[in-house]
Length: 213
Image 1 (cartoon, helix red, strand yellow):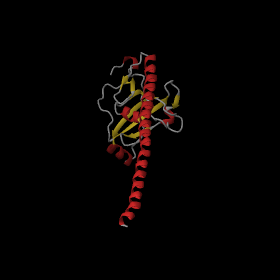
Image 2 (cartoon, helix red, strand yellow):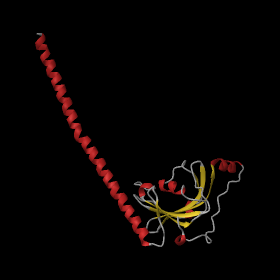
Image 3 (cartoon, helix red, strand yellow):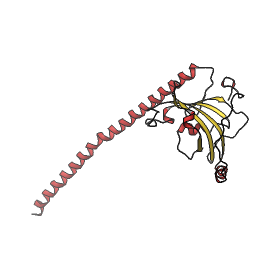
Image 4 (tube, helix red, strand yellow):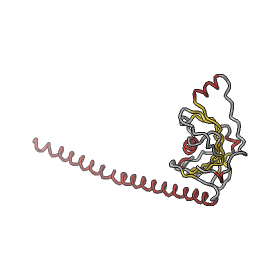
């Protein structure tokens, strides 16, 4: 009697085990598909970056008189106005005052300097495009620099949902007027002395063709 009761129970256990096995086996292709998708996505990103870097390289080679430098952060830059007297650059804890203009790689204006001015930026504490955040930190006061940013350190896949499209590399011209500590900036606000910086007259500065890094 006892033995006969055990048979249905053993049969039920066998069914459950088989069901679990089938369930586990059914999930394996999903895991493989997921890994394959990630691999293909990484390959697409590599091709995209390589393509954009090729466009930037062509732009640089199209005007050999302009000297561009390659940054370890993945962008290229060239001095329009260079300040070789100062050694300090903006760092976290500073507030930077700058103007900039955004173009596509063909030179078409996307956002003019007038549209974007003035810019007051708490270094490394505000959310701005990655390339611009890194680029500002290499500049000295009164410098004007052209930056070439691949899309992955600009606005990426989504663009800015306005004028900047999907995966669009950018040419940004940035003028860093000044930077001061956050403490000094807070005091200026407190005493009502904080004013937008005036644009510099660059006619007496060295031209791009004669600058060295």
